[in-house]
Image (cartoon, rainbow, N blue to C red):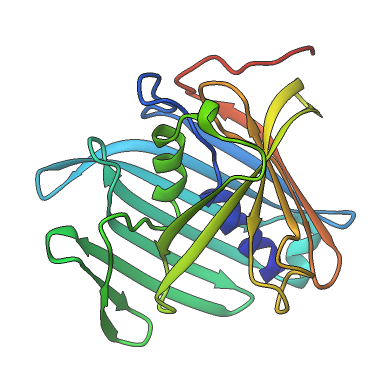
Length: 259
């Protein structure tokens, strides 16, 4: 079941691109995903976006939660919470929180970003440790990355096979090199109807969880929202599928071709 939450983490990071003149999101946006592991309806994950401030800086506050349900929770209980505070004007992360409990495996991490000093301070509350980590100006955390990408890039400038590279910090393992490759467009059937999507392939580490470096495929809506619609993954053992199950408070109209 831990694999499911790793997939959920990647899902949070991989929304796609919209033009700045058409903002992709607003405070009040709420997304819910249903995650299947094999034949099991294994868990649900949600993302909720509100506004706040940190040291007088206006920020968005996004909370991501993932939790096992039903039959799956008998074998492996998971209750994870991720939070990010990122600038409403510059999109930069200012604080990131990760509190997870996965079958008794726990983490309690807080990261504060100091962009003028090109560093982040990571606090491991569980073990009472603190780390200074050097970061570049374009650093993102696990959650802020998706909202950053949704507003930053112009899709019409992308070609099939083109990739996005980004530095990401969300754990005590340090800065992670994240890569996302554009595969083209595809119409998929959802519970809401047919939706034209942009198809991506995150490049991940193979071996521990995934069969290959390119075992993940992601679909996001080809409209002004650019929200995740579906993700599929071939794991080292079994496969996983996550689908958008509910939504509310979108900034732009959700484009559905046919119900």
